[in-house]
Image (cartoon, rainbow, N blue to C red; front, side, top):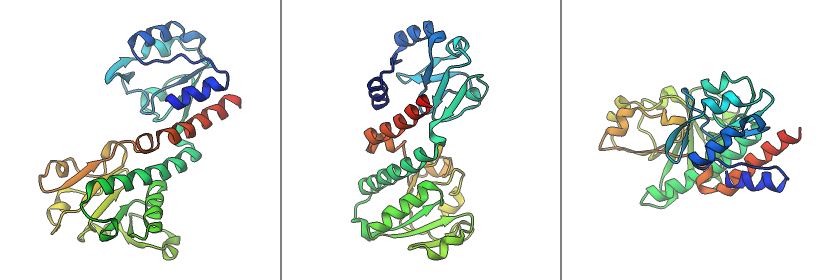
Amino acid sequence: MEIIIQRLRSAGIQVQEGRCEKDMEQIERMANKMDLVILPIQGVSDDGFIELKKRGYCMKDFFASLRKETLIFTGVITPYIKKLPQTVISLLAREEVVAANAALTAEGILAMVIQNTPRSLPEYRYDVIGFGHCGRAIAGLFHQLGLEVRIVSAHAHPESAQLPYSFIRLQEWQFQQPWPVVINTAPAEVISEAMVAGWQTQPLIIDIASRAVGVSERVYKRKDTHVIAAPPLPGIVAWQSAGEILADVILKEVKR
């Protein structure tokens, strides 16, 4: 957000920041004059709240005061956002953002593996579940580093025969011993407690699916497993790059 604010101001756009309740009260008074609103990446909860200083802040009065012509940017489109009469643009749904964030996420996963394993990277083999943008970016980066990678996917892919790394169907993988490091990108539960109970050795599991839905909650509670729900990695490992990616999209839309 800091980078977005800097870029907007450099483009001559007046910015009112909402960092605390006092800021938000002033913003609410100016709501009917707003041309552009940039919400937190996680958007607005189903009951109309955003997270502000680790506390919930109700946005209902603010949205009620906005003009219909106001343009709203958010990351996640929640049910509450869908009901608004204004034009809403999801930054995370833009192809250029998705592709760039996938590359930054892959760098973040590499950093997490280094921080959470006691041995050198080439001493491990890596299962990457999911073959979307993030799965491809992670597998590609790890392969470039000379690491042994295997893609795990619920669906067949015509190009899998030409891949420079291994490929296995999810239905088959779920009945096997996984490789020592498992990285899930699939937005659905793919690792259950029953599966984990049948493994002879426990891998490091990193789940980057939104809301950490890839791994059963019961698996997280097991004392013999090492499971990590990854935070939004682009804003942690490359916050300046992540901010510039979003700022580019916002400025492009504003000019359009």
